[in-house]
Image 1 (cartoon, rainbow, N blue to C red):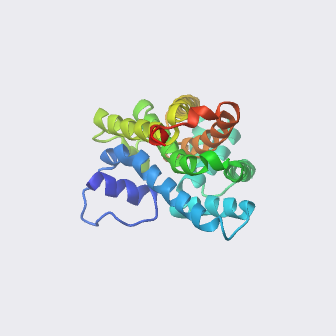
Image 2 (image 1 turned 90 degrees about the horizontal axis):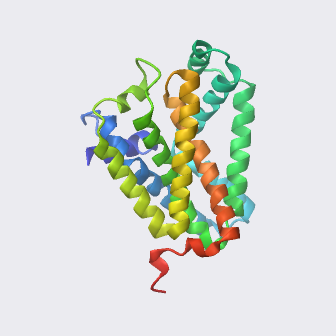
Length: 257
């Protein structure tokens, strides 16, 4: 299970990969959604433990911060860099140059604040009836979005961390990732889960196409952008679906009850 260890080590702050382990990030892609489920499970557990201690507003803030801590701020940093690049650059060369710049600009600040505000508000607003399953599911769906974009769109640079995901890649990795995501979506949220999977896939592909058109391909920062954007949209759509058609969230796990 070297691929799983690498996926956990890359996507989280947990140092589970061994130093002498072959560095094959392409195989690790297959386990991105599974790592998302692990992160979601941790969030649901933390949420359950804190419900008796903190009011909902504070509890939601803790969950958002814990997700950032558990991932080492990897994805939100990429999102903020991409905001500066995609919104502040006027040529492909300039956009790629901005992605290399370690400083943050106005677009990064505004984008980051807006993202966190939406995510916190969405987490706080989760109805009790779907709170636990959606907390578990939304990090899985967002990491599936990264996986599908890695498969579909080329990498924009000749070197960089993201290029490692393009070497030794194989369709089985996408198949495993999709199977994990589909089964989790169906079991946790029923028809609504399948709908959220479709939304996450369409969003990731559309966002990836737009960014690839501006940059000539995708980068590690754009993968983070896909992840962060998909997380927020899945939460928002999940809340809307529950309000309009709560029966869609009946999952196979509840059929026997």
